[in-house]
Image (tube, rainbow over all chains, first blue to last red; front, side):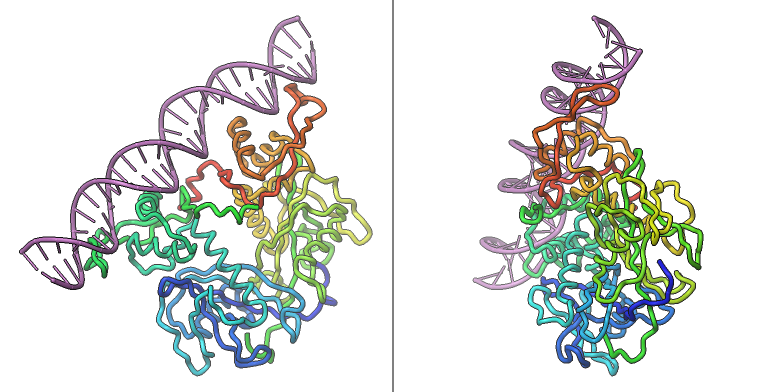
Length: 237
Length: 237
DNA sequence: CCTGGTTATTCTCACTCCGAGATTTACTCG
DNA sequence: CGAGTAAATCTCGGAGTGAGAATAACCAGG
């Protein structure tokens, strides 16, 4: 850190990759831009860092403001910063991106100050402005990895959930099928991952089956042992 | 991302947490500040993002310039961004920090434009400027975690190394003792982690023992299965 | 009400992996 | 040469895993 005399003017924005699961697919929240550049195309919710505002605070604000979502995300964490000199044609912009997880929420309402916002399946996105496609990809990969060793999946679920619902979250985010029996054994054997509420669902599944027991998120911060994805040869080398 | 009309002036700096192992202890490179604020106290090498310069590029430049180290680090990656409004008393500064790993290097030479720089054991650091102590702590924790599932430890070693040297790296970074026999079995059983050069050390250890086989880093990007730290109860909840 | 299909939960079994300890072998030092 | 040290390998009991099966509860439709 040197003297402040000469430094290139840089703007700092905060962008948010908000993920949820709808309809058995992983979705990300994007908004339609109404200003140049990229007016009319889709982008991550985000904006300039306010004066006196912490980075995480700005991320939460942008998410609430631009998405029109009232509910708080269940979890938000810093994803990374993107500073390619050419990433914004107007001027030098460094984006500090955040990753948020939310249970399935209603469609965002378009408010007065709210651009058109909506959930889109991450594997079928329209072209995104700036380097936002890259940021989404990084966020999805982070989410996939974190499901393995943290109780993050519970952030996609409601206050209470069944083991099958939790399994569906894993299957959706990872894009793989999991063995129901082994998953069940594994989840219940990890201390602090979930705790039984004592209740069950009101009815069986829509296509039959017994009532499932309900659980809520436990107090573990790490899964021990972890729930590992099926081996992905291509990822190793 | 909105219009550029009004945004608070923000400066972006890039700071580097460079780690190495010397003398069986984990060390971080720090420099002595010669300007206010915190003149005379220690800080991470870093500085302002240059115009037209990518973030990672700036990190490599700062490390080379301020440390006076000629050699390139074996690995460098983004650690995170720090933007507390009060972290710098002069003005609003967001720091994008990078984490670098290097094999044991000679002491940095103090050049003309080079502040006093030196390696310090991370568990015995002087007070650091700004929030740099926090950044170092985050970097060390990241390094510890990454040793588990990536071949990062080889970045701390030279071009060739023995299994014992690799084990010493793990023991030093994790601060634990490892079972030599099991570690040996594990390392050689992970595909692509290390590959034998065919050679051995010239002599046995300083206190005896046979010549050890030499290995170089393999082509794996992930360790499968991972080398897990001994269970840390306190980390889970 | 009875039947077939569906799902939650538990169990079995063979296999792999792991930690702890012991063994064998090669080398240094005095 | 003998004691001590370290590299590399092996053993063994326990824990964890994937695949499959068994049991039981529940829905929908006849």
